[in-house]
Image 1: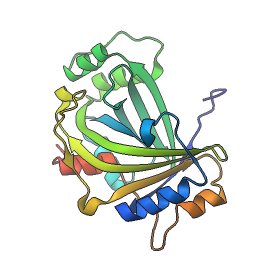
Image 2: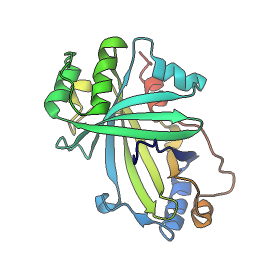
Image 3: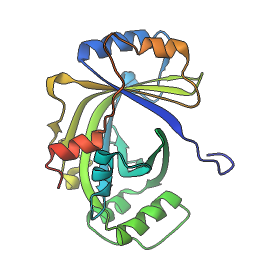
Length: 231
């Protein structure tokens, strides 16, 4: 964010088979670069999502409420040295994401249900603390998947291929490599996402198109909660 201007990005999603995703990956690799943070070309994302007393995030997604927000704590490759608290907001078809780092102790206090009233300069975390006491935020579901990311400077494009999407409610073992997980996608369907600022370069658009592929709405959070029985 620069000059207090909120930056919102376009986000389009496609559901693909493994074979389709491999075709797209080969084509994308000729017009975009692998994300430098992805050792071996991929990383594992694990997120703990929160919802309020009325399950507003779940039902808001179901009914298409606009604008709407999702709150989550995210780690990469089971690494607890960098824990991110994120707020993802969707408005008029575009997305905005803000985050703060939190400590493992703060995470443990959240899971234990402790009220955190010591506000500091972390604005996202401060807002989360407020919502925990006023909206009764509670852990809702864990979402995990393997991500293959590519980037393109032109248009500030990010292409991600998310595979093996799984859910869990084992919150106390969030950092464990042995976390019990349940796959949510039947028939080995995978998710392709394309995020960009104001324009999508033609070569990127062509690379992610296959016959009969259509843009779809897809929420990993919503489907994982549904798989886990919602509440």
